[in-house]
Amino acid sequence: MSIKQNASLLFLAAMAMSCVLLSSGSAMGSGFAIIEQSAASAGYAYAGVAAAAQDASTIFFNPAGMALQSGNELQLGAHYIIPKADFKNQGSTTVLTTPLSGGNGGDGGKAAVVPNLFYMHSFSEKWTAGIGMTAPFGLTTEYDDGWVGRYHGLKSKLSTLDINPSVAYKINDQWSVGVGVSIQEAKADLSNAIDYGTALVARGLAPPSASQNLDGKAEVDGDDWGVGANVGLIFEPLAGTRVGVHYRSQISHTLEGDANFYTPAVAAAFAQAAGLVNTTATADVTLPDTVSISGYHAFNDRWAILADITWTNWSLLDELRIKFASGAADSVTTLDWDDSWRYSLGGIFKPMEALELRAGVAFDESPIPSEQRRTPRIPGADRTWLTFGVGYQFSEMVTVDFAYGHLFIDDPKIDKDISEAENQLRGALVGEYDASVDIISASISFQF
Image (cartoon, rainbow, N blue to C red):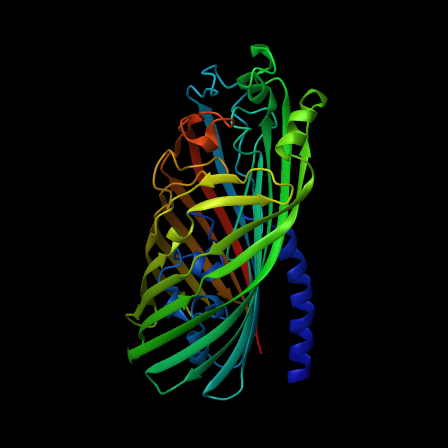
């Protein structure tokens, strides 16, 4: 196949994939990073991904891995993420110490498809280039309109599209290096109810019965483009034994968009005076950098073991602050997140040349430091992964990979402190989640 034909195939696939990426969100995770970028690696819980260099998805995990492969490859993949986040109210109250009304909100976790595309082309034995289109960050949570935590959050959606052209160079038989540029779009869509009734009661402008009976609603959306980079190194001291190191930079976004407020007529004057009117809005968000150290060792042609440690710089996220051009007070949610670590271990068994079986475990730390800092928009907690996968090479050109993973999540608890200014109209939300995640992954790769 000619370079021109390769480029045409990539362009058509990229156009189709970009439409899906721009319309898809993600499910809640540890923080809101999405590691689900390879169906093959999903089978062994993403262990050793900075060293495995198994297919074109190495563009995301460590571009140096392209130098260890030959020929051209186009890979299309998708991950169906099915989160569960059932909340149980445990004594939530308003600032007036009356119980917060409403139900438990239904299942706040919403299933989502996270697609990805990778293409790489070998120019020589030394040089390989590629491009990846991924969604490295995202979340989707949504609750019933009348739920008890409606003043803290109704719908929360963040989606990203990351276009990552990369190049790799094979220095010698032991050392390979790769570097890439990330051109990233981020989109956000947030909504929550506003308790105008309690605000009016607290100011003596309405009787106590108005509390929680004059709800309004705020909807904010915004988007932005940012630029970052990633760089990786792979060292192979012995044939079949590799160590990889990969760094992916932080990317800063200033999301700009609109804020729309829906206000009951009796509270219109109060809302106008407070600046809670339709306006433009901005929010600064820095998506964190990561460092991964991976190992891969093949005992023989049939057995291999993989391991990985990844650090994520979540301490960048002190707060979510939305600024309104109308002069309304900033909407602030304090996060105070900590850096987090992810540890994984996986194995590969090849009972025959065309068939590969995989399994893995991982422990994924949550960056959320306490019950007071957890929010129903991102009700994450520490997660333990258990995954299985299979890959089958149908021909020299076509390989298909499947994987299934179940994530056991420590039951997340929320205990919002009513003494904090940001919670006084939102209420003291207190409760616990029953949470878990299932992930089904699939991809098809074409080598030519």
